[in-house]
Image (cartoon, rainbow, N blue to C red):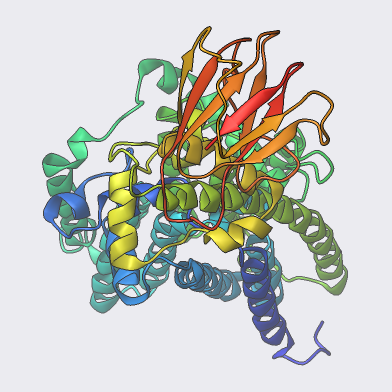
Length: 553
């Protein structure tokens, strides 16, 4: 590699940064808000101590709330592009800091390969594609900055490191492992620089974090239990094995998407053997133990707080695990000279891993895209029904078809729309939206308006003539026969005979997503359709009956 231009790895690194950013933006261009982001948008729109400092689940997320508030004030919520650009910026800065850290120890070519793995780490697709993970990424970003600042070994470096540690703690609980790293650095360098002189490096951020915990964090949910503590070694083994397997492109199948840590175990054993052989050549640098303290704290704290839904193969853990493993490897390999053949082999392995992981990343993007389609249709239904929807109407899973919208309530959502704009489909866009979007919009509308029906048995009057009625007779094409409805009250009169079935649709085509109880023979059903914000798009009634049915608007 000595004959290659010295600046080539840096140019390739810049290309990798640009390629990763372009790929993420291209994959996420159609996304809207997802999952926990809705909770921030709905519940933290007013700046106060409680909205800023209240934990999210078990995490502090002060910086994330402030960033979300700033984006809402500047750009509104009609588009997710601003938060996606911020996500990409954070990911790029993390990669740059990682590159600098590794390059200082083992050179630019290994640093290029290491950061490329992280930039295209498809099994961590939640982190790479979901802007809500800025809290998680922000802690990693400032944690890496802290590690680099500690390398200055001077008072100014300690001040910078302390500020970075405070920022890491303010983004998420992933900042806590970097407290362990800072404490380890102080203790391991006590002979050269003393302990008490440097204790403020981590003591001040810890004190401020403790004040937050006493004021707000103690109310956060916790899953710490003796069972989790006893099971933590197995959890950590699976977590690390899965992370290492994902780095090699072996953690998630690109065919079926099934995650497994199985391939990671021999890789981890191989790494441990290599570390053992390296230990025979002399002591590890101080930075190895500093990073080791952070990695160990992260893995075991994760294990102590595990619960269903946060298994070792949870993809958000892959990102942090990959970075910690790469940091440990860089410190373990300090002083090793890389030959041409070793670099070529490592480059080929990296390209293979990236090719597999990009497929997994695309699968993750497909998931978010499908969820975005459903979300934009669901909230569009609330906007259309805003005249009559109940304030506490909630997009629960049985209503919306997804658990990711449970934080959306009609009153809070409509207030946010009035203040910051709408992320929803317009009625016109709904007509050309994917099939599932139109279907979900009809289902949610039927409950948000809501549609209502009153059945009167044995009320059919065969002799009573009515004007403005449509008579649907057996055999009339198409099947089921369809009648356009107007807002207000519609009478559906079923002649004596078997039970008749009624179905409703509005934006859906060639299907009726909204079933009704129908009407028994000889009955009259009064169907009430409230007026709403999309009068150009009527409801349609589908009828399946063996006898004439009279539909009167």
